[in-house]
Image (cartoon, rainbow, N blue to C red):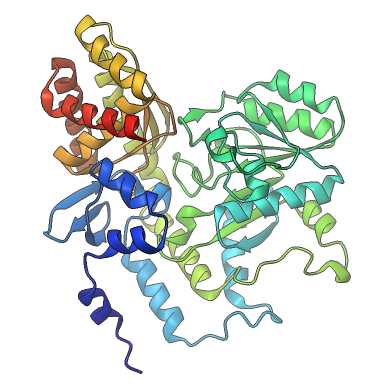
Length: 457
């Protein structure tokens, strides 16, 4: 066999953006060029990515939360090598392999009150499964979801997605119902119709980093159960230690009926998703031998995904990454609050653990208000993108805006960061915002570039 991946990567190095423009979604490289995020990365380790010329970038994006244990963790890599070298009889389908059972056992040991696991390949697929399980268990069809929620982009998960920017153009969707996030009265009004199968909710919304009010999940669960409906917690981004608990709902006195996880469970290598469920829900779905495969997926439970998941859980325990997320999250939050108190442009800092949102708002200074108004008139959210872009270009820190048309940036660093990375980020953010408040051209020139791009598009 003449195929040599290393040779291919060397021969075609640097062609990624051109190939995407020619053969994949051409808008991706267009956007990345527009915001100066078009670096060619060569390798990654821990909390850092490295460009071809060796330039180091601090990763406060973590692949949208995928790299919880850090990039290229040696324990996860070793587990995957072992699984490959073992030559396992994988995906036989008509068998009950060991690795899915072991990973399910480990997940359930960390989530008291949940009894069964369904493995799939992604977060959106986990949400799809949870929606089907809820409908099958309750014999009802309508699902409640929260405004501004994000649960995925397939038809079922899109039907409970609270972002019109994702939904537009894909109608008709399923007849599910949006309620305001954190509004128990709205949930109760919908439940009176006695046709609701479930409420699906993120304990901390990824879009905008909005945190559920204290007690909301527990009170919602009680309301739902009183009306024969289920609580589904989407922990695809918040789970696996991100908020300083193994799962974010564990901050509330509640056990959901269904929980979805994915992203960080992969160890940053092999896509994997899972639905954790109460026993009786599984019994309703898989109600007889005739319905043994009524909901299944070909690649769910594959050996590499399971090996990555098991290794990831071991790393979380051995390195106390859940505790580290709580500690570093508090340190980072406290220092960001300090910036908010002295910076006219910052109006809020919120989140849990290492999932933090920084919201910007209209400044009091007349001179700054004029510049702010130019950005807002072109497209709401451009100031946040300006901060993200300046952090990247000047300080080599990778972050993201927290949603379309909002002045919020979201921080999702790997859970293994230390005081060093916290200090690097806080110092860089303070520098960018202080220059913005001084009216420095290096920051606002990038803003003007964004305005031109927004107007062109």
